[in-house]
Amino acid sequence: MHCPFCRHPDSRVVDSRTSDDGATIRRRRQCPECGRRFSTAETASLSVLKRSGVSEPFSRAKVISGVRKACQGRPVTDDQLAMLAQRVEEDIRSSGQAEIDAHDVGLAILQPLQELDLVAYMRFASVYQSFDSLVDFEAAITRLREESGDGSSDRSAAGADAESEAGEPAGNPNV
Image (cartoon, rainbow, N blue to C red):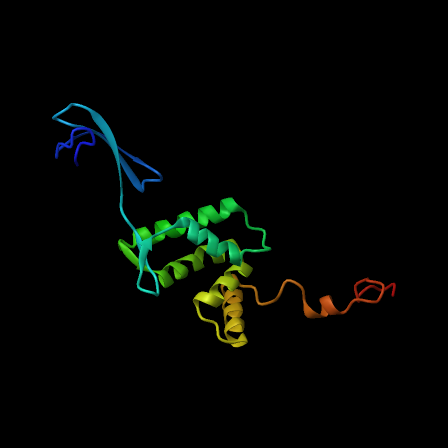
């Protein structure tokens, strides 16, 4: 590491600390030539390879932006989106790869999003799992119901459709 003051090609590490959730190492250094101290920050780079072949740095903001579209109109907070993006980045970094395909980033979002909001998950999954027809949606919904152990919908079809003109439930004995 070159000294930023005298450009000496060497420096001595005085102190090292992790910061930013352990993703960055902050080092305090001292130049043996001029004696001045300076700080450096070291991060492991993570690049995303896009379909066009261009490689760009991983961005939590882009993850949040993409997921926010799927969560539009859903009860999902900005803090929940930030935590999701952090979890996705940690999962990707734990793979040990320095470069990951953009499609794989989308797939890494699916599990945390499924745990956060099922409707947003279905919206997002329809893009990243290339749903082509209603059959694909039905299969995904069936799989989600089987995973959760819920074989029925929130409101039964009979209960939702069988209301009297007065707005009372159809099973009301006073009608």
